[in-house]
Length: 154
Image (cartoon, rainbow, N blue to C red; front, side, top):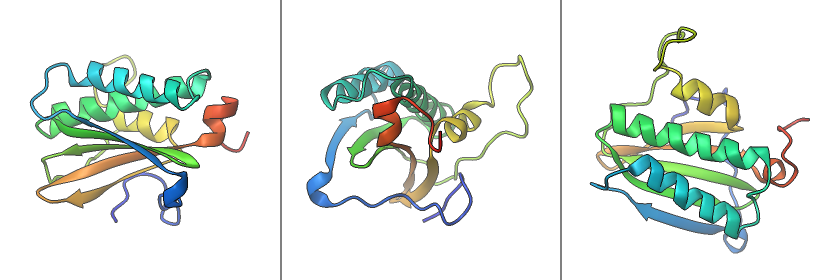
């Protein structure tokens, strides 16, 4: 597994199969991928009871940024996958093998180049893994944050 986010030693948390729920949204060729992905995520958070905190808004922003990056830099998103366990794992599958990379220090007040900084700031872990001819860019947000609304370690 390749990681672009937090330092090594922060691998994605594995969940027992019984505790996991998974939802997938096919987006290949769909118009309005970011809006569709946000609506899909909002409904999943509502169904799972994780929709009433500021951290749930963080999830929606992470989804938006990952989908936007897939559209701008990887030819579009093929699929959005949400996996519920002790944490919420957000996966965006695209068709480009190029690893995600943060823009060199984005400039204040100038649009663009902030997406992966936002993902890094709002998620507890993030990274990417090659998959077929493309990759999966993932981010995880601890479930405790989605229940309490507090940042990890608060």
